[in-house]
Length: 99
Ligand SMILES: [Zn+2]
Image (cartoon, rainbow, N blue to C red; front, side, top):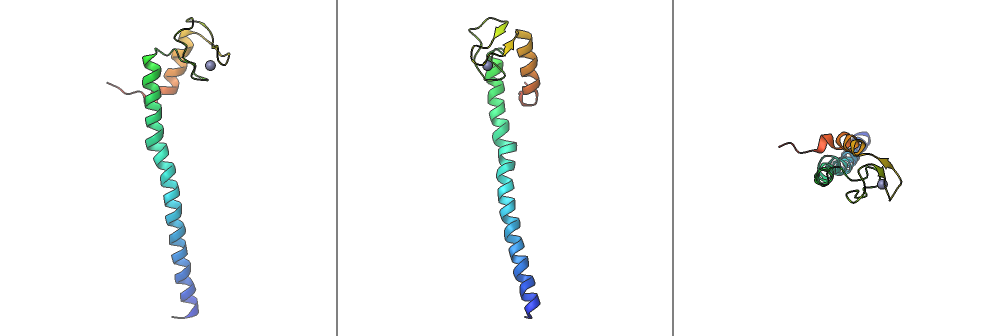
């Protein structure tokens, strides 16, 4: 084996290793994006819907004991029953289970 092809082979091997490392790294990100995240959001969607959208969209404070129109006691965000429904529907639309 000549010097040049030895280095070429070595370089190729290194490239494969970094490709593999890159693949492992990005598959962890992909797993989080396509598996963990949807799971989290679906659980969130179920919870918010069970509470009839009466959850603060900003800090997740449970507003069930609060008036229909008011201000979140936790973070001060103003809300109405309608705004909560609109906000949550928009946030959760892709994650809501149909049927
Ligand atoms: Zn809040």
